[in-house]
Picture 1 (cartoon, rainbow, N blue to C red):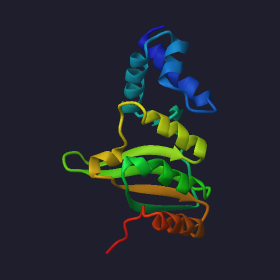
Picture 2: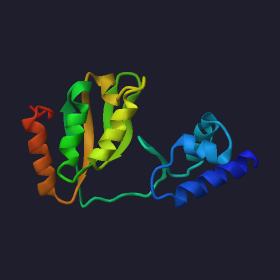
Picture 3: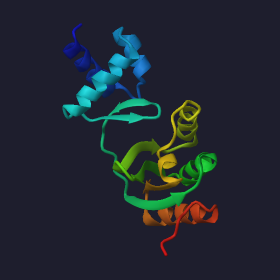
Length: 171
């Protein structure tokens, strides 16, 4: 199988998958290294294919819509990351992404798609490696977009985040 055929196979696998597929799983299935898969996915994304990298693996991008999406400004250190994310998902909300402002690179956003405590635990396992969360680049200050069923649920999430000292209120 040549590189073009392999990339087409990656697209087919991701389109058929019901859950995220890790680079290691794709590498084993296609009999190449994980780095080859990472490069292939980068090339596919650069050519316009919607592939999202999540903490659990790659997914074919299917735009999710939420009846209400709100944005919160938070600050905390890494030791409270799990508590923050669990606070959001415990209300049935989804932490869509995280955004930080960087002095050199400007706005940096990382897709999260975290909707459950299981998703939070998988994300936290990734932090056991040498990778750090984006908020570590901005002294813990970051934005989250939160997807909810309605404004009232978003307000409940904000109240809980505020009570736990995560929210940075506008002055």
